Image (cartoon, rainbow, N blue to C red; front, side):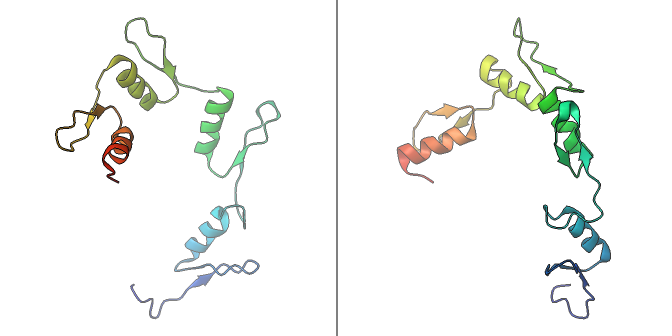
Amino acid sequence: MVHDIDVVFYLCGVDKCEYKGKTADHVRRHKATKAAVHDIDVTFYLCGVDKCEFKTKQSSSLKNHKANVHDLDVTYHICEVGKCDYKAKRAANVRQHKANAHDIDVVYHVCGVGKCAYKTKTAASVRRHKASIYGVV
């Protein structure tokens, strides 16, 4: 509802927190996920690898942590171009590597200002170019 007329709000009720939600579940999620404020009814996932003290509220974050920090349960993505030995934990990194190192599946971004022939592999680079050369923001 746009004006919240006749809406019964559920209040957080912890300390001086002024959060209110339209459902009890909104308040429950607020209490569990509010960054280090309440942590009520929260299940923490602990790393425990080699006395690592990392903890998170999401199991997927723990899986990512273990893969990225401890190299556990990692699936590596391989470049597979010629004798290239590049590998990465993320497929997107391999795609970017192939574009940068091997010119495979490259999408070029062009300047487009007047007859400027500038082109680059990243949108950010063309934005910087336009700003520095033409003052275009």
